[in-house]
Image 1 (cartoon, rainbow, N blue to C red):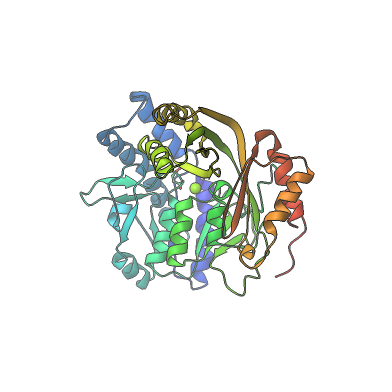
Image 2 (image 1 turned 90 degrees about the vertical axis):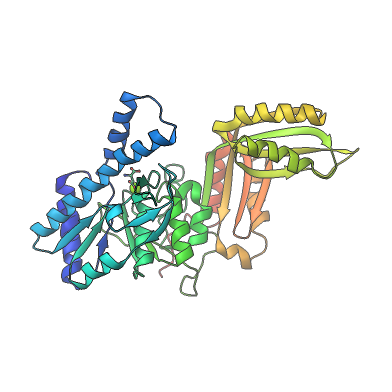
Length: 401
Ligand code: ASP
Ligand code: MG
């Protein structure tokens, strides 16, 4: 919702459905750029906010963006001749924990909303915000209105949750890397979560977790263009799953290796324990088969935490009398994702062969039931993603459903 003109067009779309007999709840986010503008104001007054008291005020400020949106949308709907009413999160109420700037929804009281719907009103609820047990305004983290919408849909047992955003769906991979990437008609919740590195640019990933947990079918659609978008749903027979749904990648990784650690129980737990204490999340972990009583231990972390992890690991290595610590922050992770993998052997070898044919060396491998990830040198990202996209037949137009 970039302008009042856009809000008017949203209202017209909603009005069309209302006239077709749908009962609807609309969950807008702030007008584009507004949340950034509001948070920048706080920054002008104090460059950083980190105490709970400061974070509380950030939420107080940021939540106003959505409050403006809901009021404006209600006005626009009333101008269309419809009965509409808007609510801030605390008025519903949408109850959250007290983790300011990244609160989690605990419950949604659907009574007031249901009464309005029963009375023929269109209900507009502010996204991104809630209220904690002590009555403080909270927000759900950037992009959180997606999660608000799914949570409201789950609470009201809605038939479907439509998310209008600035892309027209979920793609087989990032079209900036592979121009032949195409929009998926459907993808399962699980695949969408595995595609997080791509998918999180489309939806707040927590909204997908929520939708999966409560089985709320989600559809991602463009706010600017007509089109069917992408349905994110549970796996069923109607969803003739392709072998591979997409190629995800992540440029934000770095790897660290500690060489020559004693090969005995408790070492991995000790190393990762220290990394965990420093609040660093670990992604892929590989430990070699030991030889001569020692082994090598490698793991990846977010690139932004590479130096910090290196510092911790050097201390741990010294204490363990390990031989050396080495690292590399010029790596990327590429993953093939697909529920079809469950029932098909040979996907891994096909993937590794495609990479080998391009002369790309695989440094680490990790798998889950529906995903195979490899770590490769950063310079091979585009080549690797493109060749896998072709290998798994994703360049071709999708068969008619
Ligand atoms: N306005 C909030 C943000 O910018 C929430 C959202 O857009 O989903 O993060
Ligand atoms: Mg958004």
